[in-house]
Length: 270
Image (cartoon, rainbow, N blue to C red; front, top):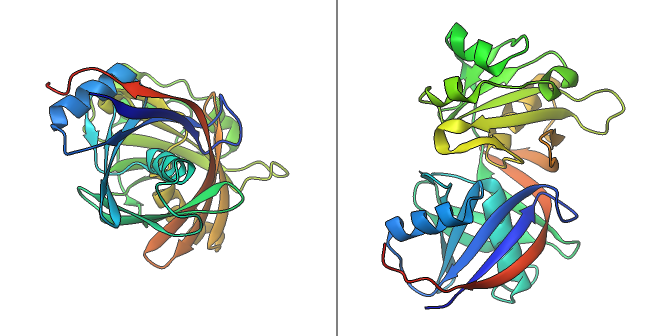
């Protein structure tokens, strides 16, 4: 068996930035146990599996330890590869069929960006145990929950950048992840900053998390009274995400760079 396999730095305009994702182009349906093993072997925050089905593409995402319901950066990486490999026409919308969220769309543009059409997620006020807030660090302010992740607001960008969480404690909580966020510094060129921690899914800190911006776009859009925002995820690698709220949808825009391509040669049996 030989399957095309790529690694893409998503939400990045150059290699070694943004969030690396593996993209595996399938030739047929595969056992999820095998996909999980491939994702563990790749050992990236996400491995995407793409299967061509007529006019659409099936899409599933796996961390090294679990399958996830929604992933932005690996969707962007998948759309980038489909366009780069001439598997999707230039300037035309790509439709991905996903396990939980149904049809998701991506539009590669001539300038190298990809626009993702994702669901808007509304964070509602919530509470976290004091032990979890201590594990996050700093001086957290308001806490919200969007059905998947906790969004924890801090006063300023420096507080978010300075966080050094206790991942062992965070991993014991049932949440998928924790979004730490604050307004961007004046003059930084960014409206907001964020970091994303998901040790419970095998990813202590995700470099750039597209799905988290489905919540950030709603939360900060309403606070700042703006439909369009520019966000920076302040991980070690860092990455930029442009967000545009469109009623119950969020358009996430970013660049991607292919850093290597190869073939998966191992057997398909789990």
